Image 1 (cartoon, rainbow, N blue to C red):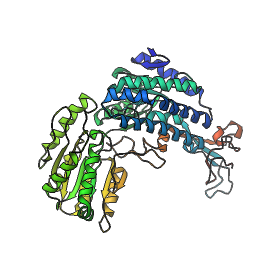
Image 2: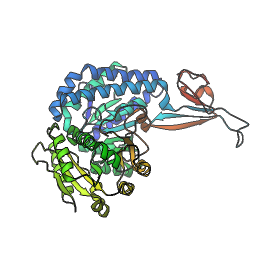
Image 3: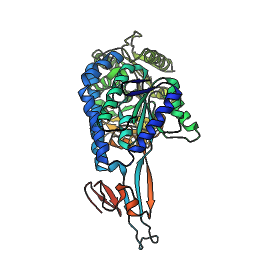
Image 4: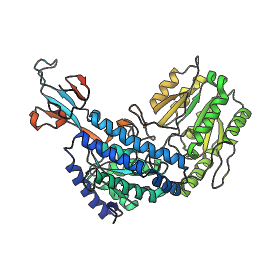
Length: 495
């Protein structure tokens, strides 16, 4: 079935047709220039901006999220597309590398060998529940796949289906305006179609943002195929925050107030929500309760995104509260719109049973862990699983070196005296981490480097110049950035 020119596949047979059309579209743009691909991204960005008022209104109805938050997401999505377009024009993502033949090469005569990244083909993208724009129909995964030169089949999230359908219509119309072939982008809806999407032989990679349980099931499915494919899944993260003694003594109230705002932002439904706070045991229960309680009285409250999320949040919160040594510091309510919960436990209990450090509570709840000795923090951190982020609050004189090294080993982004909620889209951004934060810790789903997930390198040895892809030809017809004989040449340069 279709809505306007938008294709929506709901059965395995329809997924097959959509995948074949997408593959044909992918092949038809294989030789396009970076400027053509970039212009397509700019056109989508312009379309999102032009329809932002309509889309925000739909999203507010679908998700219970505030309009100001949704407006920020649309702005982010459009900005990201334009940033990717700029990156595509420079050719940086292609990583074009030219080694001319060298008879005097140190390990013996070197042939002429040249390498460039090429798009994978057709990729599947699963939309997220908690970000109806930023990680959805034209969020980071879809945008980076298109920037790589791939075709996209996007599995819409049922939590904001009306918005997804309308966004898909706008994207497809924009692609048509930009001269893109039919089928380069289409939608998939429903579980049977989603399973067929992961199984289809023309699908070359999957992008996913969601729960650990759902993501792991799809990851296993992708790897069980006759030909396994990359599965770029963002699954779960607790995002610990460690407060060192000098910082605590000098600005405890400031830290607690900032923490309260961070873990309740968006009702605690951000993937970077800090879920555990380590503080010195000089922090009294009264100090923690009074300062956090006062700050939490100002936290904006709203319904969680879906009834299912509300149910799973309550279950996770109650399970963590039942662990040995855990007690309520700030008791939240169990209403449809829950007030924030803060649980307290001592480090000795955590050291003997670290499960509290492994259980994500996706919603407005967190755990405070009191430690006796700052020297114990690296060992406590080492008990944690892979994380998207980890944060240190420290002042001059705080011994942070070993802790910083430990956190570098478990997290994709390490913050200093800040808060992890808020993930800017930039060149150096890293939004990923060791499992279970993601299934591919060497990649990022945010920032310009996200494009590389949907490409693979191919080397050409002693291929005649005229037969080479334009990115590798001697005259550099696209004027992209390249590395030639070990030296970097900026965009616009030639060998």
